[in-house]
Amino acid sequence: MAIWGADVEQLRTLGTKLQAGASEIEQQRTNLTRVLDSTTWEGPDAQNFRSEWSGNHTSALNQVIQALKDAGQKATKNANEQDQASR
Image 1: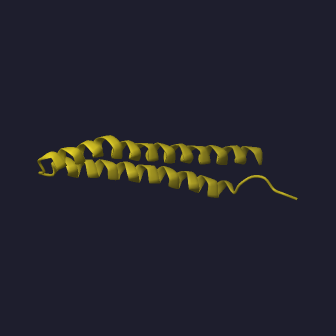
Image 2: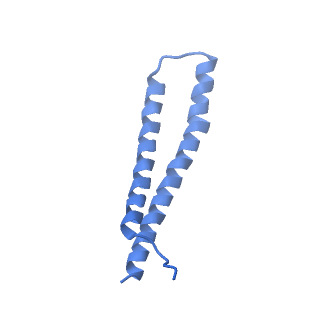
Image 3: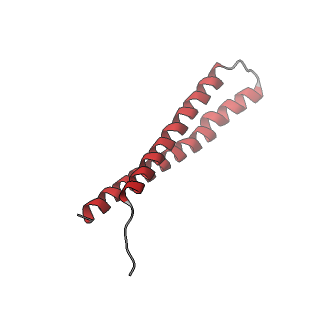
């Protein structure tokens, strides 16, 4: 006989860790932006790098952050639903 469901506590832990991962990446993005902004660097290479960072790279990091937040929320929601279904 197959059992459907999940270990609710493990699922909640997963949700928490996914949210924490999103926060960590968010903090690192902020730190790196702050360091880049305070770095004395002039010229075309600096302009290109800053443009890529503020455009492509931060956009990609923002997508990862949002995906981790969404996955964390889904895991927590599923844990809550599993908990309710088991009662």
